[in-house]
Amino acid sequence: MMRWFRRHKKYSFEWKHDRHSHILPDLDDGVKTLSEAVELVKRMTALGVERFTFTPHIAFPGMLNNKDNIGGSLLILKKYLESEGLRVPMEAAAEYRMGEFMLDLLDRDDILASSSGEVLVEHSFYAPTCYTDDILCRLRDKGYQPVLAHPERYPFYLDDVVKHCEEMKHKGCKIQVNILSFTGYYGKEVLHAVQKLYDAGIVDYYASDIHGLKQMDLLEDFMKGEFFNS
Ligand SMILES: [Fe+2]
Image 1 (cartoon, protein in one colour):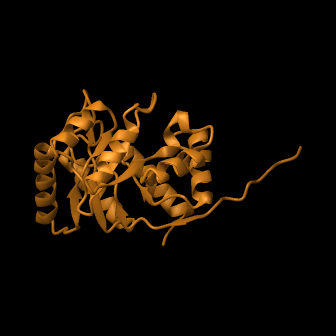
Image 2 (spheres, rainbow, N blue to C red):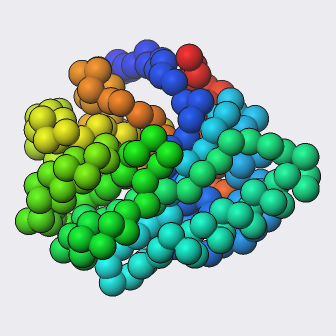
């Protein structure tokens, strides 16, 4: 019998600033409680993360968060961590699921960006909205830097994920992939897609996109085994 042993691939990338997570409690499909949020921040800090930009979903009609409830949640988490003596730079932005509603938010200047002006956007997992180009164009016009979340996860990108990302880059988007994609957590196709993006050198940011403690266990396993936080 012949056996194949594939050499474990080692990855190297920077992950000091986590730019995509669902740690702020009870706002979306992510973390539900303050204590879980606190534990995640502590465990990610132990892995080398020095700074957080939390990105709760803003999607229509489901998870229509806004500056007020997101800002309020950030304040509570920050105060709690400080009371425990943990002072980590943290801010809140959002992850926008692109759709027509975003044009209204743009009209009203009601966009939640990171302090450096970046706006995390994602496609619906069914199909990209026909408003994509319009949204990207208007974000750029207003001086924002759009960042596309986890392109390796969109089924409609898998025919040629590198080509799709190059197109998005031409439209002024940066590219963010999920670290968990390297673990096979989202399936084999996503793993292959993220490896292609890594090999093509097209990735701007690596982030956790973490939603809860189960994913944290996987993230820690991956970090210990295959990863070098450069
Ligand atoms: Fe996300």
